Length: 135
Length: 70
Image 1 (cartoon, rainbow over the protein chains, first blue to last red):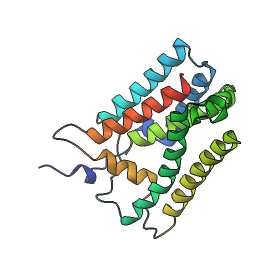
Image 2: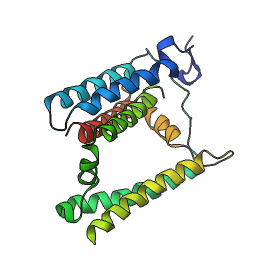
Image 3: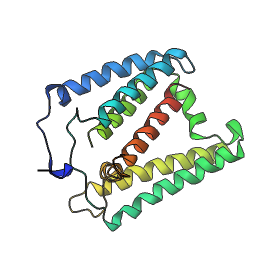
Image 4: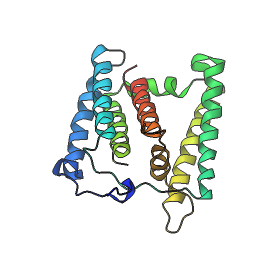
């Protein structure tokens, strides 16, 4: 008998618990933070970690939380920050004015040169990715 | 001047993201959290292909590569 996927909640495996996953993500982030931009190692590491998470996310190896069947009308509030970001990112990208009117990437580059900030950014990216895998 | 405008715009967008997420997490809120929005998008399938899941994973992968490898 088939069950709707939203109703299937399996017991989390040992490695699927925060006490395991958070230290693993921290270690991966600390390694990632050491790799400089535009290096082959940074490219391979990003592609490798992301690829592994996508492999986990598309398979049935990780238990998933149930997804909502529908979203309420309040979802339109999300358009406000998305629109503000889209206007500024789009304008700065199209005008292509460099440091005079920089895109978010250009603003972030000098900050990400610091290894600690870079590791924190790695952790944020991996943690959000892990969250997506589990949804 | 234009640089300050760009920084102000991105900071405003970030503050708005945080504000909407905060509003969504209040008890009884009618606003879905960002996690719920992502989960809903990831439910979208075309036949047996989980298009929403592949699309969101692909976008997040690209975002990490763009900021952390380039």
